Amino acid sequence: MTPAQVNLIKQSFEKVLPIKKIAADLFYDRLFELDPPLRKLFPEDMTEQKMRLMTALSFVIAGLDRLEEITPALASLGRSHAGYGAEKKDYITVGAALLWTLEQGLGSDWNEELKAAWAAAYGAIADTMQSAYEDA
Image 1 (spheres, rainbow, N blue to C red):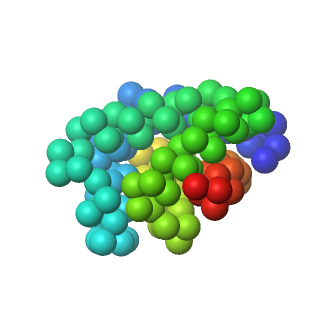
Image 2 (image 1 turned 90 degrees about the vertical axis):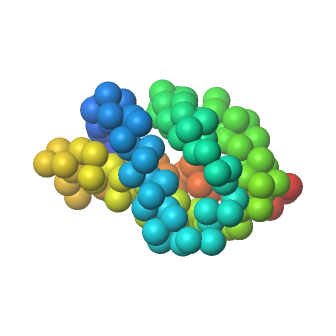
């Protein structure tokens, strides 16, 4: 991930924050559409889960230019996900749902350069979480 990509991600996420509730709805709707069995890993009432998603994204995006500093938190999150029953293959589905959500939420601001930046960021985040998953 380049510094330019980090800047693109941070700028685009600022546009997502005002619609964070909609973005969280879009994300989970898409996630469960792509892989319906994942629904069983989540509580019936998704209100708190959606808030946690947006809080976690905000934290990660804020620290994206200091990835080594947020690695312990990402590793902890990876271990937690393993404990909840998430599997390594689920990271692919989550990434697809995230990129789709961003495309929907950002509309005409979404382009191939932004998609590549977000994909690189998600790849780095998922790799860190998956490494911890293997340790769990």
